[in-house]
Length: 506
Image (cartoon, rainbow, N blue to C red; front, side):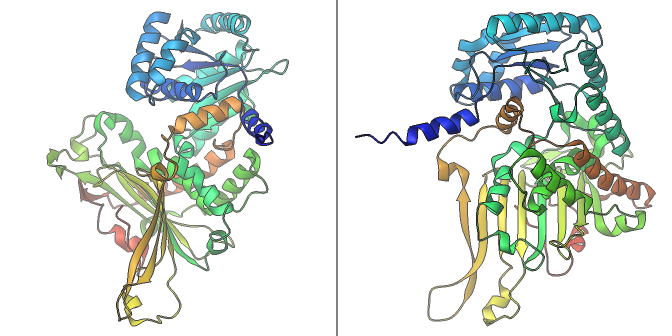
């Protein structure tokens, strides 16, 4: 007789992640984000049976498109950027995607949107559940938020939900982030706000918590007694390209370190949460950021390195230097490379430095966390003096996985120690196509799970730290250093690590 006891458990697990019918309204729906990421991710979720059949999407933008032209653009995007078989899936469900033309600042457009959403509630059974995705430049946030509130679309009624997803950047500095948070929370209470950082949707980033708290072998070593240092690297092989004007205003510290790297840092350094709930996890992340002191201006010079890439030969081609890129000033001092040494002033990490590094025009694209352990207190084998310290490597992209480096005896009569590596790769271990980060985050927003989204106080604390670095750079008489495109940055960055350490070269 077949054992049916497993089936109720499987049903329970699936029902725990079942999404309620709802409408996703995408503001700025004619932009690249919708075509390249959002709709292909939605189709991936739908293909896997994680969205209700009545799920609907309304594209809100200014261009004079029709439903047909909107769907045509989305179909091309799913074909080009979606997972396997999702293009055919979109063709079956394209009637769920409709287009709504309006200017972001026109109140009438929101009144007609409200009517349209009420019609969708009746025809598709979405029960008044709405998610508003701000896939627009930050300058459009204010009119969108105020008009949503004025039209009553941000208010939850009769058991329905109303949520807003806000894309980064979350402000330009601490004061603008505070102003943005005030605007967002004026329209939507904090529990209805989802500040999205796609790095937190990546499988290996999520696996940091699983690695630490689902295994008994790592957490006892996860402290200053055993960990010498931690390096978090986001390296990009590309230059700024067509984003020169934007990058001039942000630099790599605003573009990458304030959000992506700080988020990864909090997951690596946080204390175990009381439960895997949104507030419990985010409370611990905020505690990490609060334990990092703001920098005095004279400290910034010693604790950071900034640089710009110069032209050179890369992948067999001559490439421009940063100042020769379109939209970049000839005398620009904007950094394309930044390395920062942070100290977390708490019991767990008191003497363990954290090094954050991000740059353009590196030899290759790679995102990783390298946890370097301390050497044994006594060199028992003469040969082990030449070995490198043990390291746990978390590869976030590409080749997602986890590797560990340790010393082992080389076969033979003599005792010779050599570094070896154990390697776990997601693709080969699980044999399935890895979902895009936006799939997980979109699903969580539909389910109302804020765990992987930044909270207002989390954003503010990260800006506090970064603002103090930027202020120190402004007061410094030293311009950014230089490094040749296709190299791992300026040699001066090595001194930041201290004796006995070196930057990893992914």
